[in-house]
Amino acid sequence: MNILIVLGILMVIALIVVSVLSEMQKKEQARRIQQRRLRLQVEELSEVLSCVEQTVGDRALAQKLNNLIIGLLQTMRQLETKAAPYVESALQKAVGHAQELDNPQLHFRVRYERESDAQINKTQQQLVEAIAVLSNMTSQGKLTEAEYNSYQSQLRWAHLMVAVTSFVAQGNKCLMIHDRVTAQAFYQRALHQLMESPHPNPKRTKLIREINEMLEGDRTKFSEELLMPDSMVYQSDLDDF
Image (cartoon, rainbow, N blue to C red; front, side):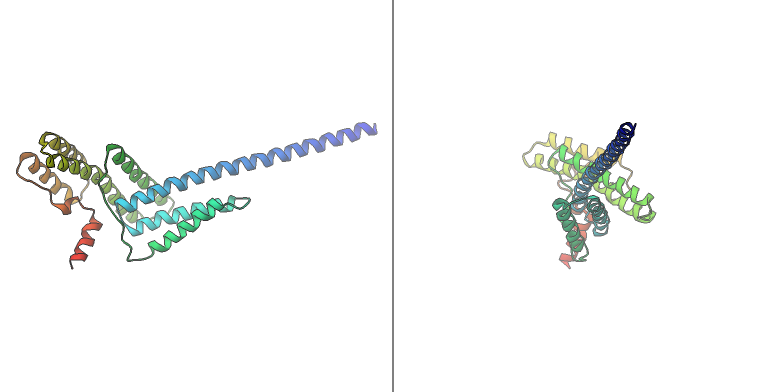
C-alpha cells in the first residue's frame, strides 16, 4: 500500500514537472515567434524609412518612423533572456540616427528617378507601406489627423512622381539617340500616370501640359523644377540666395 502511495505521488510530481516544462517551452516558443515578428517589422520599417528619406526628405516624418523603430527594438531587448548583440547594435544605430535627425541643418539626398520598372514598383510599394504605418499610428493616437493628412499627401505625390520622373528620364534618353517613337511611348506612360492621379499638387497640371507639348513637338525640354522634389527646389533656392 505504501509503495502504491509513493508511486502515485511520484506520478503526480512527474506530471507536474512535465506540465511546467511544457508551459516553459510554450512561453519560449511564443517569445521567439514575437522576436522574429518584431525583427521583421524592424527590417521592413528600416527599408521604408530609407525610402522615405530618399524620396520625400521630410525630417519630421523620418523622425516619426525612426522613433517607431526605436520602440520596436526596445521591446525586442526586453524580450531577450540573454545578451543580444544584434538588438543592441541596431538600437544604437537607430538612436544615433535620431540624433542626426534632430539636426535642423540635415539635408537628405532626395531623388525620384529609378532605373527600371522593378525599382519603381519597389519604391512605390514602400511608400504605400509608409502610409499604412502612419494610418496605424493615427488610429493609436500617435499622430493627429492633420499630421497624417500632410504626410499622406507628400507620400502620394512621391509615389506618383517616382513613376513620372523615371518615364520622362527614359524618354529624354531616347530623344538623345534620336529615337522619338520610343521617347513618346515613355512620355505617354508618364502622362497616363498624371492623368489617372487625383493629387491636388499644382505641379501635376503643369506637367500634363508640358508632356502634351513634348508629344506635339511644341517643346524640346521639360522645366526642371517640375520634376524635382520640393525639398530640392527649396534647397536650390537657398543656394542661389
